[in-house]
Image (cartoon, rainbow, N blue to C red; front, top):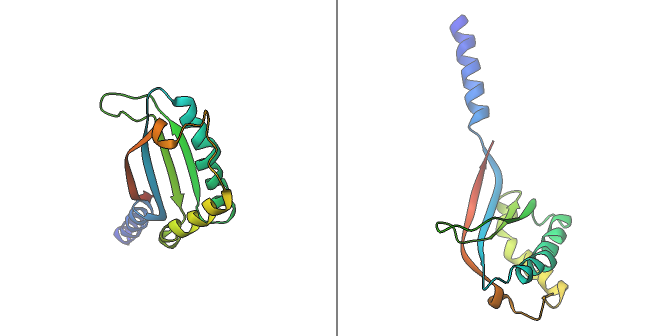
Length: 133
């Protein structure tokens, strides 16, 4: 009987520690070009972030983060853009949902009339990042 209870306890604990969450995250790693940090942060705060605020309100995404980090030789990016979707279905609708929000938002808000290609470059991104409980 003692072994039975031990078996049940181990089974329950292994299930609770190894479950995959339904959320899916995308992470984009962005390099700021030619010391245009102000332009890049303005752009992301007044365009990227605004779209994500609307997306959260419409239940298009679960959450987001706009992070700044120091660069290094191994990691030459300064900004990480993180968008988390509640589940696979929400993730699969991302392009359609964001196209809708972009159309509603109108023109890009830019600092010093610099276009995005002048102040930022996406180095790489990770898609379908899974969450673990």
